Image 1 (cartoon, rainbow, N blue to C red):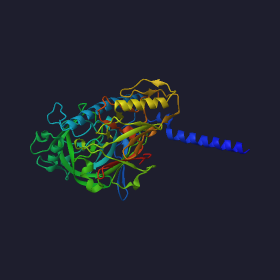
Image 2 (cartoon, one colour):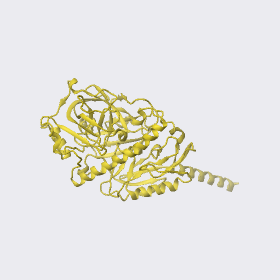
Image 3 (cartoon, rainbow, N blue to C red):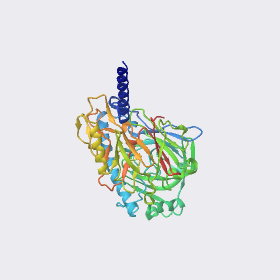
Image 4 (cartoon, one colour):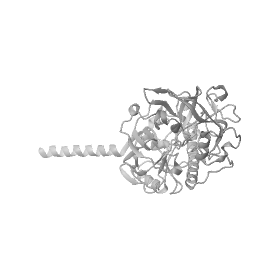
Length: 472
């Protein structure tokens, strides 16, 4: 009898260990719920903000949840996302290599100022609402950009936006910046471009051009900025008089980079150079939060925040660079030995995470090995590992974790592992892609940051990660 009990005990123990092992290595993706995400809310204007005693919280929504689309519309948009994302990454690589070599990124215009990583709405994805001169503005939030800008009247060339275009002449608090102002000189020093005052010696002009031909041109000014319940006086921003490209219907962009002109640097006395966000999925009604300041009591994280230090590089000082040490796929560790001295860039403006060819090849091979028995599907654009999951209600997928220096880890949310290229799940792709060359700069895209509290602390030069179900 004792032997029977002992055998039963061993079986229970074995079952428990297997269950725990399975739980550690795999996660359930509910496909049925994903098939309805195209039924989205109609607008993202006037997103909410709240403030406890401290810090300030703003509501974040994904741009795709801001307009109602049919399945065919969504399938086309999902394809367009990847095409534009490819252009965005190619532009980033050129810009970074030029910064490293000390050369300027040139286009047809001699006055180009490469301030940001690309401001196409289909790329940036996540939007918040601020007030500029008392007027509500829905803007893209981008950690790869420094300069904040909005469209301004009189506008010689403006794209259509949901809200009224900002009119500086109707604001008592707006001031135009001159060429001899410190802000204008800082802009010149940061870009190495002497063309910012070429059009008018009395006005500090800016011109930002991007890889797909999109651009914004205007003048630098200061204005009263209200963000949540906090007020910033004399906030420096770009007043765009000539704007063209794939910016969608937002009013402009907020730059959350590390440069002197960025929102983070300008508000360091107010928020301590600390901000964090939790990016929601594209599902209907989903929203996340942008938190300004270092008070973690408002976080809803379910795991402790683990920090890794930023990689310091004077040539890439406005970017958030980290040291990726490895990737875990279902508990199997892949060493990240091919990232080089520049590390990996974390960017809210890039969609899909890009890895050096050798590391991506290892990730793909291990994922396919563990995610076996499913019908394959054709690749789509930059994504080459796709499956037909239309006959399943849910599937078990390997857990993917990005490991960083200092034992910090980013566990990729289950919604960030697969990209639904078709809304009927007949083409579902592994949401990682390969860079063209081994020495290209790797990028952590926003797709892999969903349902994660990402904390940026510029004062102590560190970035933190914690699991969090995003809601506002």
